[in-house]
Amino acid sequence: MSFLSGKIALVTGSTSGIGLAIAKALAQQGVHVMMNGFGEKEAALAEVKAHGVDVDYHGADMSKPKEIEDLILTVEKRFGALDILVNNAGIQHVDKIEDFPVEKWEAVIAINLSSAFYASHYALPAMKKRNWGRIINIASVHGLVGSAEKSAYVAAKHGIIGLTKVTALENARTGITCNAICPGWVLTPLVQKQVDARAEREHISNEAAKIALVSEKQPSGEFVKPEQLGALAVFLCGPDASEVRGAAWNMDGGWVAQ
Ligand code: NAD
Image (cartoon, rainbow, N blue to C red; front, side):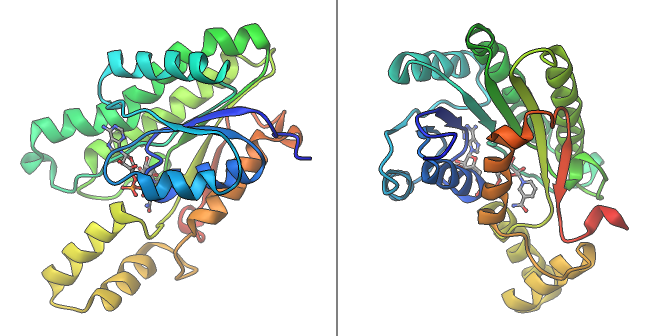
């Protein structure tokens, strides 16, 4: 039986992409999961439930602190605890600073950064009482390096790595760890939009746009797979990672090694 069997996880933004892959990877270890996120959710819930664990859904908008508080309280009430918090919900907007719509700046900062603070703020007291917890913040290579036209995203992702370090330090003498995962390009709906925009802008096929996008930044020339990030999240939740604290762990085909 897995070490994680019977634990309770909340994965924000788990109706799609990386969040869904992490929810599935945890469920495969016997972890019960509260899912969250927008859009079509039934198929995502079914994929996680297929691993034989208890699964529920809460539709909190992660840009709204009150809804985040309700989400955390609901997990604790519904499942009796919250052991693993994966702050994954995120959005992207691409524009030069002078053209960046201010409401997009506010939304990216709220969803990609502030939501992780609020979720941790509400989840930590009960984790501390049980003296065990795992907080995994899904940052990005953009938490380590910049790219033009991604001011809000890069600021939020650098910020979430700072938040990760402080969360890890404040809990260093407890059984609660906090780490960030920094993916390079992963072909999810968030990135597909950027592929589509590039194909249109450069009058190239979708396939050519995918190759151009990845090769520009990632020496491996390959996308990172959501399942690989799921496996890293499982490792960070396990006993062998109990002294991994405050790390910003990139899985990026060599992007930030350059
Ligand atoms: P995605 O678009 O497939 O999934 C994003 C998820 O967040 C969805 O479930 C969506 O419904 C949810 N979400 C968006 N706004 C929300 C809100 N206000 N409240 C609640 N849920 C909300 O994207 P993804 O690529 O899987 O991204 C997941 C995370 O990984 C993000 O934090 C993103 O920044 C990060 N990331 C992605 C990549 C990549 O290449 N795809 C690379 C590095 C980091």
